[in-house]
Length: 296
Image 1: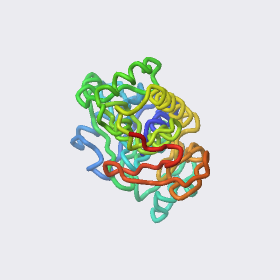
Image 2: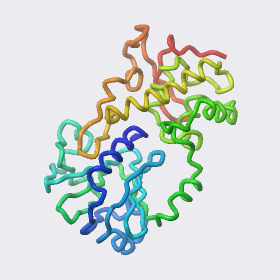
Image 3: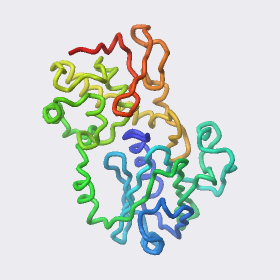
Image 4: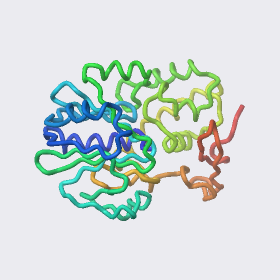
């Protein structure tokens, strides 16, 4: 978290908000967040104009007019907040309750680690409660090589990602559990814990099922779930299950559409059974035992 829909939401918002803006200066408040020597990072960003904002998997990319690019990974609790004002909320407010307390155009002083100040007075804040996120300085010419080296899988929302492509990927990992398969970025880019749960519930597939046990109809339903649920989540600007806020400091609305994720112990929306949670490979999986029966 944030996953593909949340990052895509931020990218689309920043494409409209900051492309063409000149960075007057950059403030590094927590050096470990920046994966580059301080001097080199400041030199690369100061005076540069943002020419493009795009996404690959869960990473945001800001390309500059001087040949440099910024790779931004929000990890678990990272936020990118764009503001036209200089307002901040008190540091003691924390990020955990920011969905209700953070207004558009405000940021949290305690957890803000990098600030990009634009020449028109607007600013972009990088916040991170747990400090797992980062900003990496990469030459624009090397960006594609970076993702190739990382072996990032196909983008699930691209039109050229077809059912045949998905079926071919599944044949390479027949013994994998479908939940773990979907979450592995080397198989498919950008799908994490929230959306794997929702996709598998949509398809009626138990998260413990081995890929090789899936019937043709089940594979089709999982594929349809990937496309439909991710697109719906992007349309509703993501899921604010914990710390996620969009680029304007607002929570995403897909949380209202969640069928199983975060609903342990609650009634299933389909069969009125009880949603359960279990651990698979160290990650939580939410599912309905009745709607998603475990088959051999």
